[in-house]
Image (cartoon, rainbow, N blue to C red; front, side):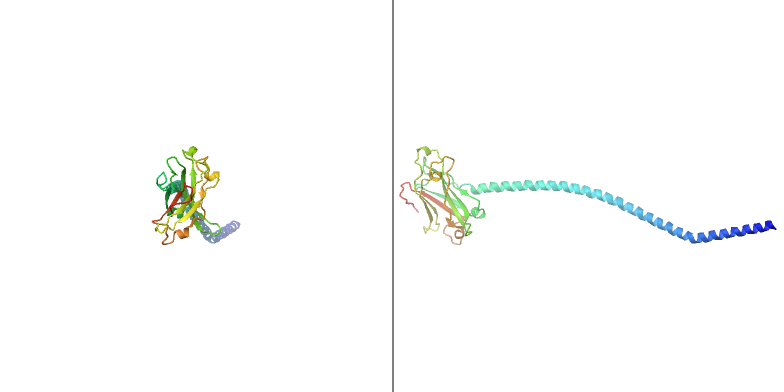
Length: 264
């Protein structure tokens, strides 16, 4: 009897444990499955992110290579720009030299002791720093050596711009047999091209200024400049008497008789 009771109790106990296992399994298996699914989803996201990371790294390497090539090309372009700028600067220097080259003319003054400088006006208007020089000319085969020049100046008070002619005595091969200081009256004029003889004149009476009229100690003396000679605003007016085909003419006369007379 006792043996039978023990078996019954054992069987009931086993059934109770089995029911508990079933309840636990029924309760936790869905959670475990959900957790497994979440883990699978996270793992898929990780795999996807890792793939994107690898793609991003590859793209970064590609961009770095492109930037490296771009920087190298930028350096080359900058060098080309610098070379081009240098070429343009050299071209400007050459252009300025060409603009300022003296107009071809006689090396001796004319028979009436005059010399005329033809000047292209447009370069002077474009560049206030430009100076146009004549060829050096001489009063005679064994005479004084001289040169005329033309530039422009702006009056600081009125802001009006003027042409600025100048005359300079150069060192010559015959200075040792000439009279010094240079004492002959000089007349400069802006030529009236209409024939009306309305020249713009300026007379120079040499004085004992060694720096200007004395015997040259260097290649050239200090130039004699004529400030406010003629306003550019009037020079460029329509119908100006002094401009033809964008050219003006500056004429010099030296009176070796010292009577102060001139042919214009």
